[in-house]
Length: 310
Image 1: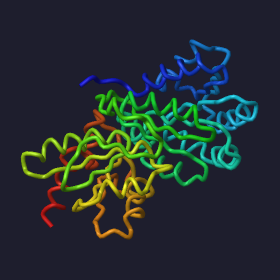
Image 2 (image 1 turned 135 degrees about the horizontal axis):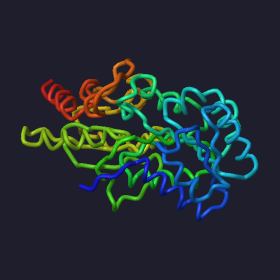
Image 3 (image 1 turned 90 degrees about the vertical axis):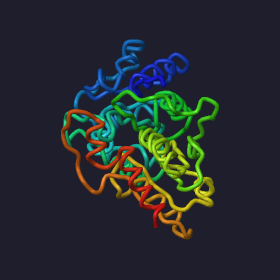
Image 4 (image 1 turned 60 degrees about the vertical axis):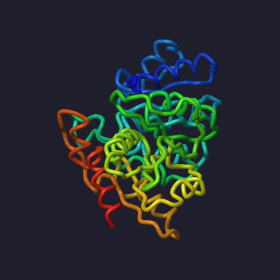
């Protein structure tokens, strides 16, 4: 399969949006070469604001731009977007439903070399907890392009989570992108495996590995955590023996807890494949960290075998 980088796809999509809409502007916190917002800056220097390492000020400034009729895309690493600027996002943007898009780059463990300080395993929980916020986590580069377009078209605050590393294209070409609607990536009969963000890749690999063992995984990708069509999610698990929640995120406040709430009245167990209340650490590769924290295909296979053996 073709491999692409979400950040690069995002940067190019933002440039195209800028050509189509003169109200699109971009803000950066001294990480533009990494977030790829510099592509927008090169194309539209008069609509690109380099704010330096001042994320709080950047978000407040974006709120002012939104009040003036602009559509600001705020760019930095996910850990700084969701953490360092949380108060400004909550107080200056979300309470007034301002049309500001927060783009959290290098999310999860994808910034594998810089350790816990640069790895965001709690950003989805923080952003989902804010009223009026839409939270998107695409699985690959093609979906990232669709997500940024959907974010631009939506009137209100959006948090968009992006991976740092190259990913295979897996989002179905014939499926329309709709915020909040689950997307079936693979049909299966035994277990319903719900993923968000990049975990769809590990789930699909696990499904291929388990097929010879007679275990059939129904892999469903959620384009984001908020909003979410709960009835559609429940329907995807109908007739299945159990549910797996796969997220490159802490088990607290993310996909796992959301699914536990949705399935609270159903007689079906929900098991996590998630970060079990821990910070990250430095490593030689993204894959090394995913394996260490039990977020790879092998970990999903182990969980699936245990559930089907009950």
